[in-house]
Length: 153
Image (cartoon, rainbow, N blue to C red; front, side, top):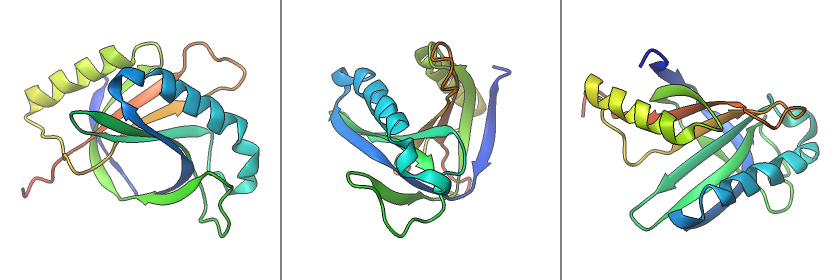
């Protein structure tokens, strides 16, 4: 579990698109969203703070809402069909993985969290960070982040 750790992320101002639906439609809809946000990246121009695609998601027993976003400076005008919002600062359990091994990454992270006696904050969004190299669509680095409950709870 050497590639698991605890990280703290500052507040992130993001702009992106989302999909809500049953778990059975994932990961196809996640890939479709990432492809769409990549194709619309030019609409955000200089506001983008990097090439990472942030994919916050939240789910319950029946369905999930999944986003594909870029971190941006605050925008006065958001492109049509996109939403701007802020992910609050938070501590996360993180594992470094790849887009070909997301399932294995989550298994590893969940096992590590159990060993460390870390609890997921159920009210917060989880994050997938895709480090996209637009020239090479094969295997991309991904960080999987699960929000942690504060120690005082």
